[in-house]
Length: 237
Image (cartoon, rainbow, N blue to C red):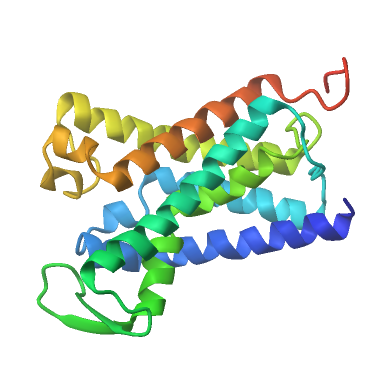
């Protein structure tokens, strides 16, 4: 694809990631209350690195956005895109149907959580920010697309930065998951502590968070360590 396509791709995801970073403190207050250490904890350094990588791609395009035909990467990318479709179906179709949901209605919530202060937002705005503008959605969409391309960090410095950022973020999150499941240490400021270990494992949102992060972590580490074969019998150096 042309450099223009690369720049458009990078710009779109730069805007998406920036929106996520700006929104996260508010999301934290809605769901956890005032917990500044969670809003921008160490894992979010990874998203800043991703943001830098996307900015580099806008100014100096180097991604290879041609479609990769390797079945392993097709499965990885397809799995992540499927996660997004499942999230949309569960949270926009199945659960709302059970709860008498209306997309044109209003949504009331405490802000910050536990404060007793009630805010009212249009349901559409709530859905967009609380369901679609999340780290799981953003990473699954970004790497669901990139894994399907021939991009490799061996020939793209911007992609290397994006991959490093993803490793930082997902590694911290996976460590947090296991610290709670194994040692009962809650890294989320109380979000996990609302559940027992088995209850947490039974939460649909935990399952798609966990498995999407796992696939992204494995895929990004593989690319950083081994890269991709971009042509028959030739590995980039």
